[in-house]
View 1 (tube, rainbow, N blue to C red):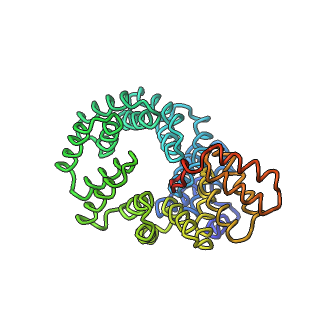
View 2: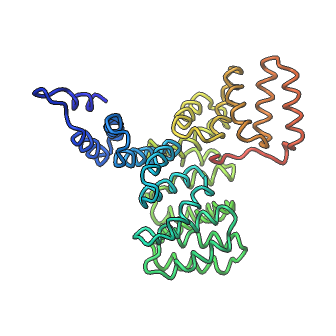
View 3: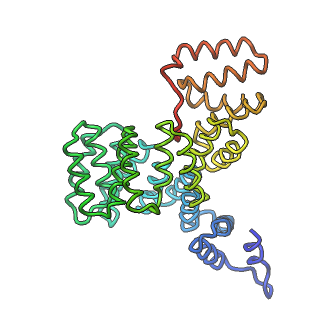
Length: 365
């Protein structure tokens, strides 16, 4: 902010032009100085509220800062000014994917896939991925099969086609895709992608086996530590999971996903203070995640702060009313505050949801 303030000081009686502010912000975003870039593009928008370039770049900044909800809001504002701009449509769809809002993403990618443009093949792939995530598995598989026959299909096509085959219980076809990956990509990347397929299919032992193969081939592969940590969390191997998640965060200190999983894991292991510190950062970046409110509430309750916990757990319960662990912690918070009638009602909801069959698992939700 100081940099921008200095840039706007009067010089020889003239204010720095809007074009100059935009150019400075563009240089800042290219250099990875997102705070200065954000301030610059906001200043452009203060002067010119309908500046499409400033809005688009602001959306990019929020996406890169793992703030997809803010990115969505910004891209929507930009699209109101240019409803059919392909780049904005693509970026908005990608932001929806980060929020797991596959239904909204699917509508955008379907529209973009029909427009002849250099983005058409990418839009078709992303549309198929959105279809896969919304249960249209066979339709998605058909599209991905066609994309596999295009020159130089992206690794994502292989990944999601294999996942579609796994979901369709066609293991032979899935194995063919995995074999193609091994023939076309370095071994570490091929095993990493296969591990991602098995993780997405919730077959965690096979995911772990492939991530470990990837690690033997190239332990420095980007994203591998995070995926190993997440998989080990799902397998309830918490000590090893913590090691990998801490490594992931060391490698990428701003990784919101790594902060979420490590923070939640620390709460599970009663390391509440550190867990709260990490999850509070996640809450600022991803206010859409009810899991963050849940784990923060659980930690605050353990730290003897039931009033703070209650607010957080009410938020989690409003977003995930059928999650028994959430209702259980909410009941405990109400009980701690002496609100016996409400606590009894919450405990009754827990019984109805059959807590034993709704065991707590750490996923990004």
